[in-house]
Length: 319
Image 1 (cartoon, rainbow, N blue to C red):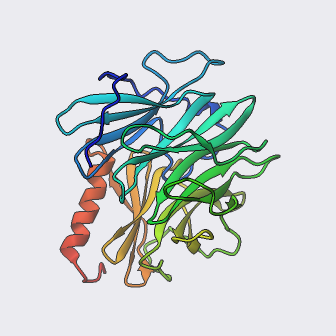
Image 2: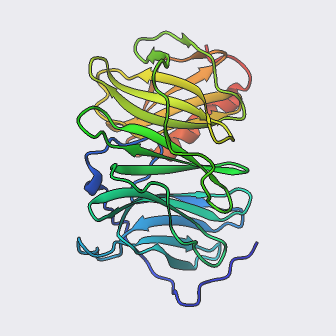
């Protein structure tokens, strides 16, 4: 599919200015992207990014636009406005594998309330923003999982009084974005917990091969920081697999947490204090937590090194 360029937009460079500080009270969730996010490459070689705000910033109280930046395979850059109503922030973009077009979610601050909005691109225009949430709750840090018939939007909802933020999910029709389910909290009660400390492997059941994986973070007042891997199915009530991981006490923070399939294995990884920390579900057990000092190595390069290692091992055991 060849894209038609918007006639009223011209190539331009934008800084990756962000507004995430406005929701600093929210706990960061798994793959949620900072302003600018990670570039996504479509089948035709075009590169897509989404940012909040313009090059010189926007005064608080005026609209803060959500902008889609597309670089063509030849290097031409086009910037389009996704939304310019309210203070847009925390945008996240994914490519729909069936249409090869981007879908964007973001948090919108207006009238003292923060809600989640979504829009999709049709090759020429962005659809009118759809409010996924529209209530007094404070919602933020959205992310997207796109399936063959549904789009699942996942976000953080701040507690009304104390306690930890909770993860919420809603299913939308992949094309129309019409709701296919009511927003609901991702279930965390009763999930088994693996302590990522010491040098032993932890036996566990893995996710189903057709489940998409998502990582959320929570905090236990007594135990410490916990990551939960959810398996998301292609259905309106999507949660199947759940596995929690108690992080060692020397982990000061967590960024860019993700769980990814690598052949028949699953790799859970995150960045903390200049290291890429990871564990691998291998032959029915999770390995001990391993660490890679990043230094001059980027996070993407370190993850690729792990993938290369697993490819060399093949179907053999990591032990």
